[in-house]
Length: 464
Image (cartoon, rainbow, N blue to C red; front, side, top):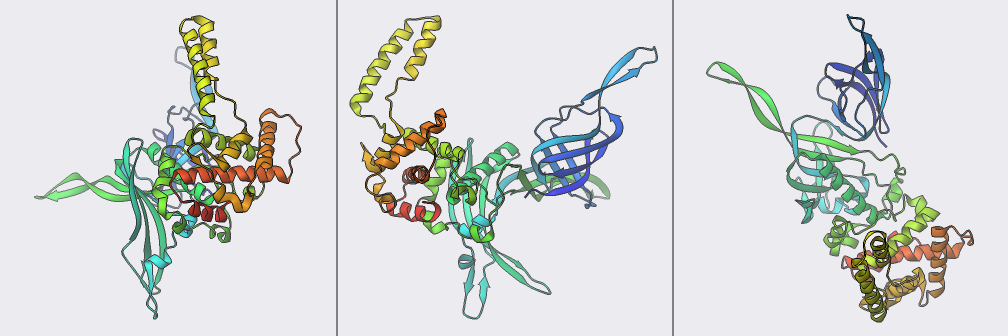
């Protein structure tokens, strides 16, 4: 759940007004006095009411501040001129904010910590040792996995680790935590940070088979430059020094379903199931190969397949089959279509104007027609160089899936063309769930997981 807070913000030079932030909306209270705003400003820095020092938050606005009215003014010569102004309450949509904000910072790390990660990488057995008389907590972080990848032309290190939080005082407290760190060269590019945030979010959504993770923010860790007095030889000058800083980036998503219960989050499939090919799986997300839209919004949505989700799942299957698997048509069929396409291309090259444009459109759609049912059957049973996934899914879907594949085909056409001829029933739900299983099989096979490993994963995270 997004936070709510109040404070004051400077929205134009010398103009400080109260604000209230809640659920992605920043309300700026200008009062009953007209103000001429500095237009084009797409970020506002506010200070919370309960902070005597610091307490700053940078709000990034989806649309820049603009004046929305005109004030007519009479000059000394009697001429009337109009000045753009604003008054009352401005409601501005916020797409992200940075809490604990300080200007002049650059960052080299993003640190992720959320409930699903704690269960994905259980830290207790790694960081705390039971020596029969009590627990010994290591003060040194334990690095479990590290690899590098290139993202948006920048090299980034992916680090999974566990660590202990230990506080000693009148009462001592110790707990273990899991953390994912992304490391990179010094940067101030917030769009880069947000892209990385969504990359991590999509990856763990796939692992959990739902999109309502508790991951709502990430810590940006780096340095900032501050000015401070330097006294030497009896003279004081203002110098600069670098100090560490940690700021909290909060991307706004008001459409995410509410968090699951701690009990359900505790069912997150642990790292040992994914360990063998985690890096290869993550790389598929970097290359934008995996579709997140086909994943369920929540556990409740996973239990209830609706029309929108059916379309997402079937469309994703056809995308995976086209992008990751061999051409499903026979060699002879494909050669025939290629020959016809070459003739059409030749014709288009000799034409001009509308004829040329129309010929290119025809050539673009010259591909062998393959029904969804045929694709499902071949991906399941195997074809050409693709080894079918029947060994993985046999125990759940049997040896012959022709009937359920045909149901999937009819239901997909019903949704795509709104024929209003099919009443969904249990067979439709089973067909959509089969295709969802095929989607996961294709992605996990592409990442290099063994069939036995894939079957163990699907047993835990998919519904039949």
